[in-house]
Image (cartoon, rainbow, N blue to C red; front, side, top):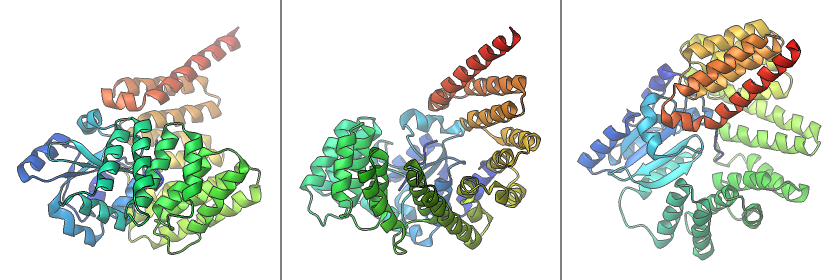
Length: 431
């Protein structure tokens, strides 16, 4: 499924209480110690409070009672990658997207990794694969490729994956997964030609599941010309319009957003609007049908995006007010509220909302919120306030752990450039 690359502690505890599994929290070393004692592999859910796809998996997949059958087979570790306690985990395993799921052996060595969301059946298959029994030769090669990718060796990982995709029989149970992995590794290797060739070849050979969804979307990402983009877009629409496709509402929303953005890129404004309207209807239905408030807020981030895309930002205000009331310790709701208030021209209220969010926030996400505050101050014409927000962001970055500083280094560099430019502009105005 699609991966999210870049709400609070109370929500973490509430979310984990809804899960059907005995999760430990954040402490990798404690999980390894237990795994050694119990001679079990470790299943890691690496997530972040701002990641709606992570919350979707928590609320609608890992809470499923059918997963309880696996509870005694693993040591279960949920790592909130924004918290200081995640430093030991992040020192060993790089996060390249959210959510990411890791399977480790009892000594903590990586044996499998899945980036992005999964359907319940995919989770079940992943868990069964590491509960004993000999792996097939094809499985072994794919696992080797996955470990290479996790270490950043995308070219070798792609080569290994291509070997198994070319050699494995068409009815191999993991073929669609392997093709999806191969296409993504070719993209990660900047092999646009290879990515496009494999994606085009496999577009109609993978059924209508998550891997086919990913391959179609990755083809759209890989290419710039309209003919090949149209091929990926047509296949993506086939998958999205099939009600039997095992995609979550959150993933379908991502798909419709890809449709809207792709149509807009080629000047089809009406088609983009229709895709966003479809997305809005899907998300509103999902939010209305959620079993509780935690399930409802899974769809909040995408609803805000969709309302803004349709120039209907004001429709988000009642939803965000309710969420902030229901989850007063979660920074996401006032942060999103600030964004919406900016869209409707209420700059002072937007400043108040982002300040509330910053007081609740922690970890690398603080840089994003301080950047939002700088944007609000700039819109208000307050250059001193903009400068103070940028400086606060850089101070927050300096106070992070080494692992978190590394995660947030690129946005920190952009903030430094913005601060320098702001200073130059102020000097010019004074002269």
